[in-house]
Length: 452
Ligand code: AMP
Image (spheres, protein in one colour):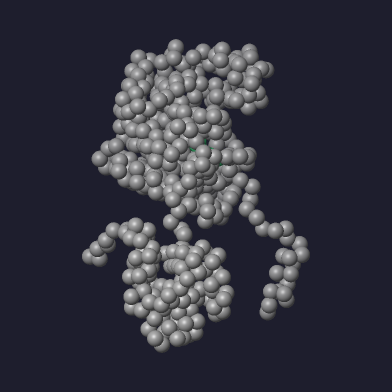
């Protein structure tokens, strides 16, 4: 039955709107992948140099992982999670961030037995039922780093530093400001939280609706509300510095000294608290130098209390995540171009069954030598093939017809000059390699495998 007669196809044509991605979701098309691939390459390279190992946790977890690990008074858990019941009646959630799942994995696999700290990185999609707008999606990619098992402030700075190195490799380090704050240990923060509640009590009517709700659940969040009236009150609110313990102050001082040692500029921001409940001591964000907090490209901090909340032993940890779409957007806005290795170098055109057969081997040989090669194997008209070669903007085409097969030759056509010449079939691969140039060959080697 043809599509024309198929009632399902007919019905779809008549009644269904065009299929498209849901709001906040998007395709990553090949052109965008040039940036994604480059960013991932830089992240992997910097991670490997520093001894981080890659981890991937499932996209779906039991909802409790995030309820516990993120905190139920956060925007994420309150309104942004993709949560549903599976067929077994269990509440499941698509991961909105990376850290909670990684802590779950650390505990589940007994990783406290490994030499500490355990250092992870990830490059993953995340899902939040956020209001879609510029730079804010419902599915977005993050790379992130976590150092688990040690509490030295030097590790907080190691995290910041690797983010900085990655930004530098991507040519955007000057486009972001590093905002840092110290929100103390859980203990000193409890006193501060009490002082904040006292300060805001009686002023509820000046707060936005959201902050009124947050006041008794997560009062720290009132400090980074973007609404005008809330911001004015936040300016007048008690400052954490008055409640910082001696240890907190020393910790913060060390962080600043280490940053200075590495030549990383920072801005102290006493209103930075981050959205997630589990942070303690250092919190930091990278803000767009022009537009500020609305467009943070990444952030993180120390989460010494989280492992215990997740059911493990007390284990200090620090980490951060960076939004890849926002990072790429910043690169594009600042005219950073990435090298593309996707351009095809050779187009092989053929005519006749015998020529097609010969081409299969030739294409394979060229590819093995690192020449990016395609063949128009599905097209029979010679003209159509050459038109295609033009569209691919290849510098050279190889043309093999019945006569050439018989003579053991092949034609090399210089596409920009429109000139062509014959070479011997058994010399053509060397000749193409010479024309493309050793430096332009695609000779990435994944390393040798051993079959034991
Ligand atoms: P967070 O996990 O909220 O600290 O986010 C870390 C980074 O991920 C942010 O600075 C953004 O770059 C990115 N990010 C977070 N939420 C979204 C979103 N809804 N859409 C796009 N990027 C996001």
